[in-house]
Image 1 (spheres, rainbow, N blue to C red):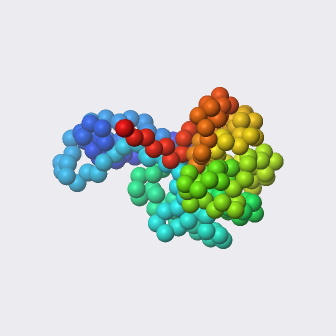
Image 2 (cartoon, one colour):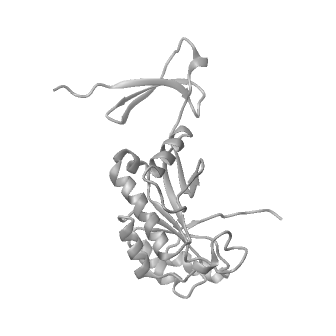
Length: 222
């Protein structure tokens, strides 16, 4: 058997605005070179895929509305492809312990069942329930399910997710936050600060413990 044949496509380079030809073999880009198309207006744009770290749902589908159908993850992923999103983190928010575990399990099952779909999911984003109970910064998260960081509970959820939880959004105002952050980071999970009423020193302590992201960060100039 011979080696797989290469194939090519032409389009407008997203950064330069110039026509290029991209040669691909076995899913890898071999070359990107200038080309001289007969009809430039017929070309689409070519650029790197978009990455989204937080997608709670899309196009009428919600990763938090149980029970999740077997088709939900593939349908959302296919619709995101059409928008240029090639890698994303389906996001599960504050809910009951059982409900969170069920949502994580369903997403993991979809990844196992369809390798192409699974390769596009960079990891699962767990947004809560370890956030502030205070109105305002808590946002739309249901207060009755908010709780302090719990490593044993998180481990059960990680098992349900098949190890796919890659990001956890939490508030560092809880006494157990710093040690929980350290354990997450040591296990390869990124910690994001969000939905928080934490004091500045609590934020600094969380950063020292390894928190490296911020969820819903809004900045303004006075």
